[in-house]
Image (cartoon, rainbow over all chains, first blue to last red; front, side, top):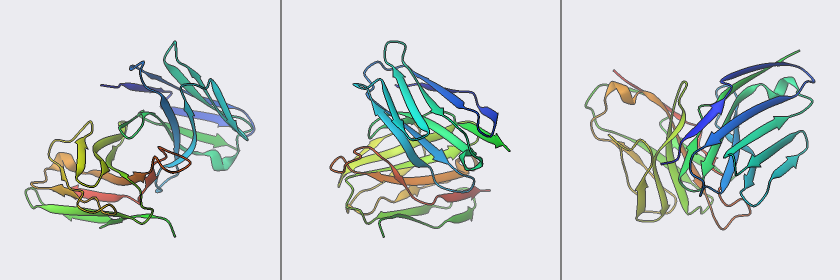
Length: 109
Length: 115
């Protein structure tokens, strides 16, 4: 089955700096790659997703890049703000979804 | 308001006492799933359903049962709970007919403790 590895497990950045979280996956047939954000005590919420026919997608300060050859994809957050502090999960699949282990992102003022 | 609801939100029970966690969505979504969230392990899919009477195992189905008799409901059943099923459980739904085909809409979560 699909195996997803996410790094780093924790990330601390200064407000205004950029943050990058990376995930690798094992099944080359996978074609959908979402990212979810989970604030403390809340449910996960989709923040951005990408399909395998696209290499990069941006939504304001958030971007996702996909390298299908290397089987990895990354979340980029620019100009970080305190409200970006949360746990971020990558995932691979469609209705059968496999999540990464999560990255706790802390934005230091 | 479009939402996924779960009940109960918190539950403390004893080993072996059967329990059911209910999940309901009002968005007419075809797909529904159950996940458990444990520290350091992320979210792991227990079961998913692609429509009424269609269910399939996720990555960690052992010790759980599900049913999908109605489109809106997807209960999770623990026939004989054990302490290793202590976890935070999320129900989620999605629809291939929507503009965001596989976006999972999560419920608020159910924190289960088995002693």
